Length: 259
Image 1 (cartoon, one colour):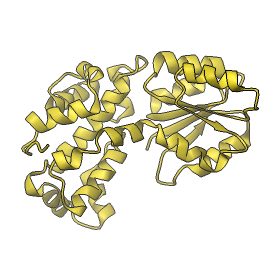
Image 2: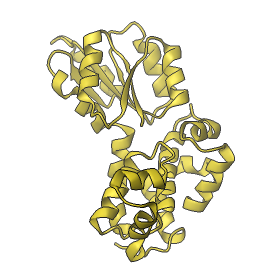
Image 3: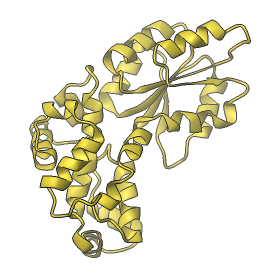
């Protein structure tokens, strides 16, 4: 599962953030230094970053994300005062995705962060994927939802089958029914879309992305990118999720393209 990085002012703020995230969703990691934030980016998929403009490391943390990981949304969460309008306008002008007021928005801050996360943007960009991939049956749609939600890891079909209480063979057969792609290719599609999202960030090399997404090597990532999207790993940095889906449907799966 991905992580939410946080550099906020108080333990209470961290606690509200943690309680606001679903148990089956991303984990919250409270970072105490810029080095800690950098290590998190290097080791896990960071779905969003929550910062306090009053934190002593605000400027450094904001600069790191803005310069190296601009595709990752930043949410500001602090005890804003009525005279902080100028500060909030500055945050908005610098591309901050959302703002939450500590002491007011605490019950909904987790939901707000999830709404602007990489995972949420990936799901929104691929909202029409079931129709394009001929995933029409309830089981197919439920499995696809898990595949998209867990695209940041090496999802195994056997583990997925156990989750649904069926055999791997039955799951594979039912998922591919009706002209849909086979399950392994659907998993690879989701992982390549996630890889493309990460490669939009200058702070990630192909080796970084292959490590964070649990590919065996950068070469493995490159081979999967060519098989799914018809481009090299470097080429993924220039493609949006919808473009990858269209490439997959048009040339990399047996499914018909439906409009």
